[in-house]
Amino acid sequence: MSETLALLKDLIKRESVTPKDEGCQDVLAERLTKIGFKEERLNFEDTQNIWLRRGDSKPLLTFLGHTDVVPPGPLDRWDSPPFEPTIRDGQLFGRGAADMKGGVACFITAVERFISNHPTHKGSIAVMMTSDEEGIATNGVVKVVDVLEKRNEKIDWCLVGEPSSDKKIGDVIRVGRRGSLCAKLTVEGLQGHVAYPEIAENPIHTFAPALKELTEEVWDKGNNFFPPTSLQVSNINSGTGAENIIPGELEVQFNLRFCTELDEHTIKQRTKAIFDKYDFKYDLQWRLSGNPFLTEKGELIDAAHTAIKQVTGFDTLDDTGGGTSDGRFIAPTGAQVIELGPLNESIHKINENVSVDDLEVLSEIYEKMLMYLLVTN
Image 1 (tube, rainbow, N blue to C red):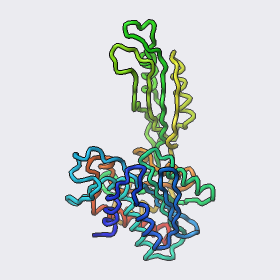
Image 2: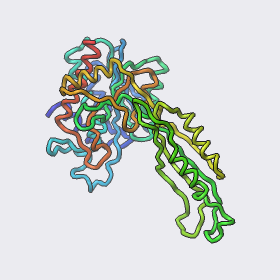
Image 3: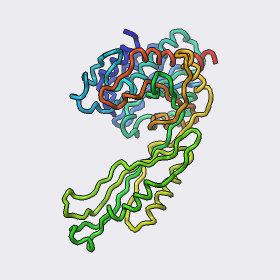
Image 4: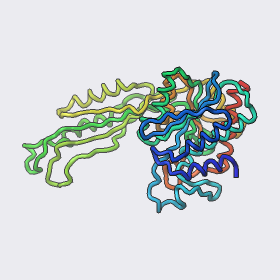
């Protein structure tokens, strides 16, 4: 059994449903401190974070990952227990296999081999891990970055091991992500009997025209790097459950995935302008999950392209699709940030899995990137 596969199995066995870590970071710290990494725990509330760094000089290459996983869902729908790593037909099954314990295992073993072969490499290597990525992400990387910024400890290159690949390992890298802005709207009405609508006010009815306009709004046309901004309503709740009562309140949750053509302030202004056209009382609360970011062509993207070509023989595609990642907290510091990891087809699904062969390919790609950035470049 390869080192990468053995490590991944160990990590999957640990039921680290967000925001739990269940000893995963201890395993990584034990391995990396043996090869010269200094360990620093930066825990906040129920979230465990670790910063492991080897070297004090520039440039600083950081591998970023998370040890938490999403809940497994109905256990009886799994073909094998989600926290008992099982190999079938060349695939390793288990919660977190692809998102993202697979990427973590690959970059840990790549770092170990690289340091064994190049103990006097230039610059520094760091590993940043959190147990709060799959949750609300308020006590994880965002707070670790704040600590680093306050002491002026700057990351030059950040490689996120999130599952970016599409059909085969390394065919897609994420060089940016859309922003994510969440909204919670409360519309005030007046509860009453359905037989007497003249002395009640139905918030569903009063909000309906605004909802139509909101969902039909063309926010922008996108650009060369991002698709157009999209808005999706995720929850609508109103009523008491009784069929003869006009509800007194309506709650709506919606989310915008926005590109670099927009900013948070503009979205809020335009949304308010839509609502204010209509006659209803409302309260609107916003939560910014992350701003869009884009890494321009540079050493990190060059390293990824070169390494993937050397290992796989094909060219990779730069892309900005998908959801958000913790890279959104690193990019504003000025670091170059990309995501490169396993196939994303099974993430968050029942029977999540990763190819055993892909683990070795990905670990080799990471090692080649280390060579490119910290030895030959």
